[in-house]
Amino acid sequence: MCGIVGYVGEKVALDVVVEGLRRLEYRGYDSAGVAIVTNETLWVAKKAGKLGNLEKLLAEEQLPPSGLGIGHTRWATHGGPTDVNAHPHISSNGRIALVHNGIIENYVTLREELAAAGITCESETDTEIVAQLVGQQVSAGLPLVEAMRVVCGRLRGAFTLVAVDSETPDGVVAARRNSPLVVGVGEGENFVASDVAAFIEHTREAIELGQDQLVSITPDTVKVITFDGEPAEVKPYHVDWDLSAAEKGGYDWFMRKEIYEQPRAVADTLLGRHDANSQLTLDEIRISEAELRRVDKIIVVACGTAFYAGLVAKYAIEHWTRIPCEVELASEFRYRDPIVGPTTLVVAISQSGETADTLMAIRHAREQQSRVLAICNTNGSTIPRESDAVIYTHAGPEIGVASTKGFLTQLVACYLLGLYLAQVREVKYGDEIAEILRELSAMPDAISEVLDDIGPVLNLAAEFADKRSVLFIGRHVGYPVALEGALKLKELAYIHAEGFAAGELKHGPIALIEDQVPVFVVVPPRGRDLLHDKVVSNLQEIRARGAKTIVLAEEDDDEVSRYADVMIKLPRVSTLLQPLVATVPLQMFACELATQKGHDVDQPRNLAKSVTVE
Ligand code: AGP
Image (cartoon, rainbow, N blue to C red; front, side, top):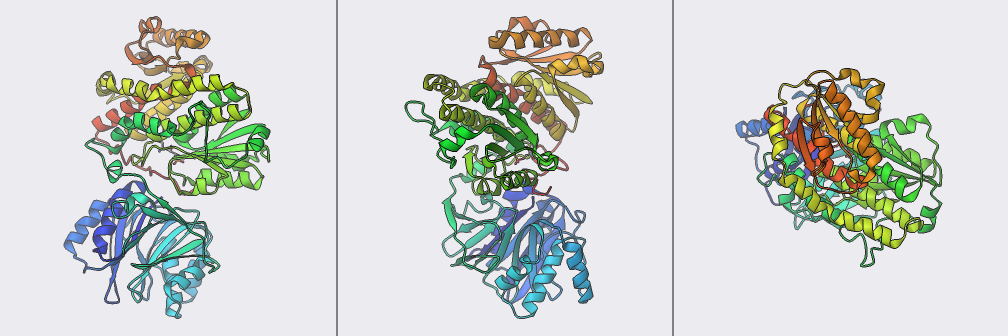
């Protein structure tokens, strides 16, 4: 989950690399560093802490101009966030500078081998081992790309590696296994990076690198080979994200901007999914209709917020298709010896497409002959590349570590999948599907309505600055919304928060209720009165015990307003689609409270945007 950039071309490499690192800093910010090559000499600058610390260092110690450079922002795995452990790492012969994203699992053995050869490492990192090994190979006369290929063959684990050699001043070499790497193809210049945000202001032409592949770039060439040294097939694609989409656009936080982008993101994710007769056409699904008709179980695997999207998906998919749908934490899935096989459809939900837990879960599923469908927001990322089918969410880059538009568009993709399965298996008539699609097409406006009236939520945040615990309850699809609301508060305001199924309160958690304990209550639409009435009873129970009730309910739901200390009004939508509107006030509440507490909303402590280690 580190940020990596490499450049070769006519521009000042240092400027291109540092600017690229700035757009990738959300991938990790424990330290940052750069290396450039000029006159057969390696120049390196690196510093613990955020990118700003490195920029201060570069202002003090000017590096010479060069058209070749690499850079790195780190999320520490092996070795603490110190200057010495910061990347790039340099081989002891002074020739190789190398940066790395991932974990080398056999680094201890390799370090012992180096020590036996008289090479001692100065850092605690697994990365330096690789730099030393590549340094050994170039000292033995191998060109950089061959040196990297030989070393990659000895590594176990997950890695994106990018290196330069002081004695080959016109090229960057990179390699990847189980970790992200994309190539940016320019005119007289080329780039490698962890994701396209690093170079889209220079070029929108990109190449996705496959598993166990190396790429060597010079100003005019891009050569891709396999770890076996064979030429590799490349898949060029055009990046359609605007640069402004990766900027804050006048908001204080990327997260706030992304909350406001949700109507657009939901609309874009719905675009082009059905024809004039509401016949769904999910053309990225490369699984035959016959196979989909044979599916007898669905298992959703995901982490964090994406897992909560899966919990919502379960209600919709089971209701619409009558296929049993389990939802599993990806980190638990492969260790519980799951019952999966050729008629199981495993659905991996991941915004980044690089989450290691989810990636390992789908690999396990495929080993059991299951078909895998990815729901992902990052084109060219590893999880969709390793799936049989993909539904891309079109949320655009989600820079804030706390997922918002990623979550809502995951919900939309899950709804589309459920409707597609119902269509293929003919368990819903075309007009029933058309009706739900019509409701979905109205959701961007419903979300905008919530945002237009978000004032009370922002005012509420001011009262919570000193709260030490907040509870969230909901029923049916309101339960995953309660879990997501609690997660947002934990990861942004660093406040203990817990989500419960409202029906569970009486089985224990109600003991937590005392005077002024704040409880957010997600009240279902009145379309399913059984649910609505039950939640009203729960509301009465906690109010009678002194809870401060913040009630999210339909704007004209007078039955609940009498039990609400604070009422957050929601537009009237159908039960299964309510998470699309009920989640938004909870996202904004957490964002505003964290802002008022002076936290870094976009880069919360201890977290990174893409968790690419297990
Ligand atoms: C959500 O706000 C968190 N950032 C985290 O739970 C995230 O949803 C989880 O790590 C999964 O990430 P992914 O969707 O990129 O796989």
